[in-house]
Image 1 (cartoon, rainbow over the protein chains, first blue to last red):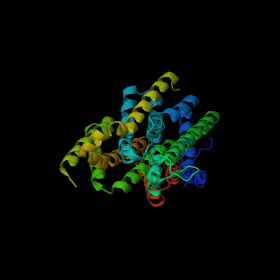
Image 2 (image 1 turned 120 degrees about the horizontal axis):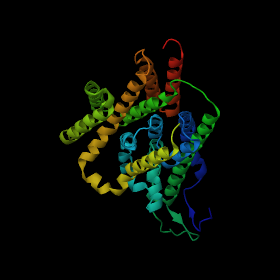
Image 3 (image 1 turned 60 degrees about the vertical axis):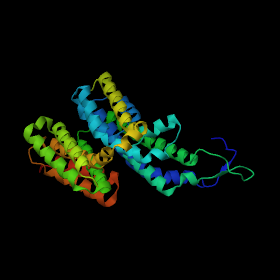
Image 4 (image 1 turned 45 degrees about the vertical axis):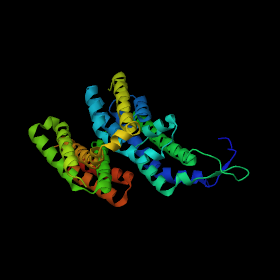
Length: 253
Length: 109
């Protein structure tokens, strides 16, 4: 990057700060991406499919879920519906970040594309620690330079998003390589998806602390299972949606 | 074997849907914020759907063997407990999955 004509007042040790933020994500994304790449190759997928999906889809739970679906040759419509359900929570992430994301269309689109659970939670902590609108740039004479709000912050956000995306790609590549070398039959490794769902449920609970959605989900699933075990998930989601709309309409808080 | 052409089609479709969901708030923010129902749904649906997905994954895994859902419940329980205490997704996922692999590969289950 070429040296800017003006020097930002508050960018001391920016790389160090970025590394502190992205290191925990790297610790998670590299091994979890590796498990994804490994499982996909072991299920009979070409190694390049692991890379393409981590590059383009970039959503852990949906990617884990697609492995048994692809192995079973499930129709594309079913895969599309499952992706919609698993990633529905992402609609509600962007809303709380709207004001802070870059104005530039390309960067904004990239930030939206990379808004995974982890990147989202880091960005929300980033905006607590920084007051982007108070960032001031001075030119050589010490005069304030007019500036798009928080451009340092924008650069940090984009770099963070790219680093996190890179860790996920790196992990998937490692896993695909290991998976195509070794033939390990380990029953139960695909439980990683259930464990990931457990983690995401706990995090949703932490931010909501409302028992109603949990009870609605349990009851819906029990009812759906009694009606038609083969379509239990689809029916249960429909029932929970109806209940969700009903609660949203009647319970004003 | 997974057919590569078919898999690529699925991946592109998944990518488009995931991006659409993540980008929707930026395109339709005014509409989303004007409707209070959306905000309240946002507090209800993610937790309900995640609970359903967890439940479905547990039931699906438990149906593959005939010993009851105990390995699934113990392993998912461990993952959830660790996540609640430590907020470290890697630790929770690895420990939960490792316990499950252990339980499934020993003779008891």
